[in-house]
Length: 387
Image (cartoon, rainbow, N blue to C red):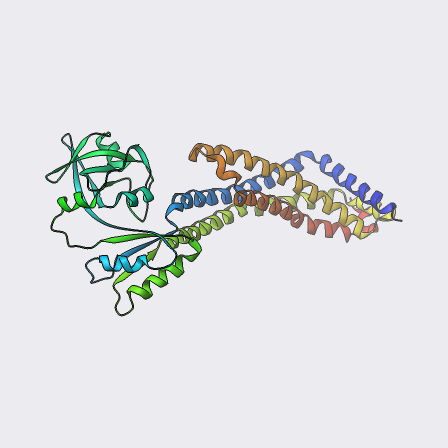
């Protein structure tokens, strides 16, 4: 008896394969529906997730920072407050700075940027050099963002004009893109001494301070400790945690991915209806065959198994093809759009392909359930009389 069951299962599996091959055109059309559905649901998920990964990576270097600003009604962050913040446990570095929007001139051309008062060590922490070197403390030199340098065609060694002062460019920063700490691409960075010469009437103190923490998991704890220390009696400073930005971005792109997957699921729904139609037609065409099988001893379970195996084989084959095509197509698209196909190999993207394959197989089985049930419920005499 134990040997008979495997043979029996193999027999119905062979019958299922034979029936799929017998109506090859119809099988191929149903398979195409599944393939399109799997590609749609997988590629939509990969597209949304890749966008999320790309944007999150762009902001990865700011997620461990706290931005400190004067509270509404307060003019600036004082040196005393900076000293108090330094005493908080868990802080890696604190970078106080001032900034001022300004017009920059070079060879009769001009543009606008932000002039920053920042210590050399602070700039080294926040930005990376493309050319040249960082300015020396106390010097009249400056370092430019790549955006201003490209726009005015400025090179290392050039002299720019800000107000009535000339500053020698000793370094150009690498392009970083949008940031929420400092605007590196459109910034002019100089020492506090030079900044004081440019804006002698500015009040003492700082416009803001950037705090990096030793452990990103302690970001909220450090934020609360600073607020408890500085804002004990009155609200003197406002603190903004940059990890909230990345969390918000994750939430937005998760919603986008879910929406795109929902659109792709419509294709699978259409594919399920197509399989239902194929299996129903197959059931009608094989009514007499089902009657003969039942007359010679096939049970309802045997007929149900045979029809479900047909749906399963069709779903597995079509879903795997759809998954492979998604992998190849996504590789080409991501390589073309982002010039980096490494995102495709991220575990979260592979999961979307596996999900597409799973839903393709599940759709096939659901589409084949009713026809299989209908075939198993046929009465042998009625089936044999069917014309």
